Amino acid sequence: MTAARITLLGSQHDALANHLGSHPDCHEKAAVVLFRRLHIPVEGLPDSDRYIAQEVILFEDAWVTGSSSAHIAFPLTPLRELFRRCEEEGLAFGFVHNHPGGPAAFSAIDEQNERTLLTALSNRNGLDVTFVAMLWTEGQWLARTRTACFPKMAIPVRHILVLGDRITLYGYKESTDEHTEVQARQSAAFGKPFVDMLQSLRVGVPGNGGTGSPFATLGARAGIGELVLIDKDPLAASNLNRVRGLMRSDVGEIKSYALKTFIEGIGLSVKVAAIASDIDIDQAAVDALASCDVIVGCTDDFAGRELMNAALYAYAQPLIDIGLGGKVDNGPDGHPYLRYHFGRISTILPESGQCLFCQGVIKDVWIQAQLARRENPDITSDELKERYLEDGGTDAPGVGPFTSAAADFALATLFDLIKPFRRFPPELRRDMLFVDFVKMEINSHKTAGNYDCPYCRAHEFLLLKESCRLNRPFLGKRDEFY
Ligand SMILES: [Zn+2]
Ligand SMILES: [Zn+2]
Image (tube, rainbow, N blue to C red; front, side):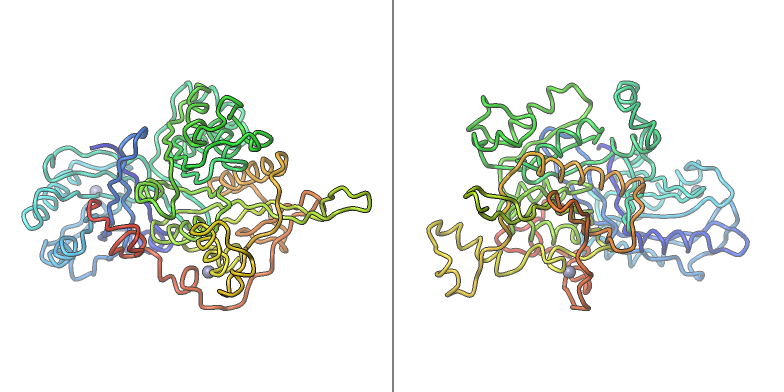
């Protein structure tokens, strides 16, 4: 069993931190978090389960039989109902408490308590259960996991990720000297913890062309710890004007594979997985995507964006989505000229920002038109119109400095999520930026009205209970996850 990763929504973190710190005499308090455990091995990356907090249950006062600043005592009886739910709903049990007076580490008593809880849990639910312990101390989260098979072996998690309107990481490891040397300049700008946090993250990059390849290559250099590259298309000669790290000799090769080879050849500590498929149709690609902490969408297709838009809520993942658009006209000299040409960077967290539908980045008619074109590449615009569909997007020929600049802007956006450094003027939205390379402007659309969006307002997809992947039958069931 290897180091797991924990994800909490900002609202869950706030509820826990408020509860744990609420005793009038600074006694210990406790809570339970029920986790969904995503156990998804990804070839090329270290095994690391994701525990996504599904539900926070605060201990009621009546459950506590005694407490002080150094202990909390409770009977198991009120927890049995939660053990039952774990079994019935395929959830992992997490015990949470705090150390108001220190120590800033798990104690010998914690060790005993965790084993007692795990024994009770496995007596009821069997030997394949896993158990999470979280400790809130001195404004930091610590966490570790155990299995019923090896109850004495507590494995510290890789990190605890809290997703509010930014990304906050706790419990991450210090990076190695080698990594520290490469990242010396970045440490000088953002501090050593920033560098360590970036190294702890697994970042998924669907689309490995004009925006995906510059993002992934610079992201690797910037110290992202793990990259999941997803693209099934072969490199075309006409891509060579803008991709990074891919060569003439790679033409005809799968972009994700060639990019992985290039990034591994740089000689950094990054670990790279490459998957040759599409996230909107392939189970393995969806699963690899779900295993990531953060997604940076570099695809130009609407169906892929729709899937990421659902996944960001279901799998609690920040999504930074890159797009390019513009308008090319013919000038009086008969040559084309750029009327405008922009890079769009959308930044959406499960509890912050508008989703891609509400931002107007994707529309149902565009998605359906794209799917119709996939089935029949010769379908005409008129035939689409007859089916009330239309091709989406604007004219954006792939121009290297623009695709690269948008990708660089997205990486800086990831930096800003981890360590906020940008000072936004009031007219700009954090979740949606357009950088216009012709008009030399950065702007945002006005926030759309109060439409009851199932994604970002009604939150129907938030921590989705999946009957099959993202509740899309064609993506198959996911029972192997439990
Ligand atoms: Zn303790
Ligand atoms: Zn929305």
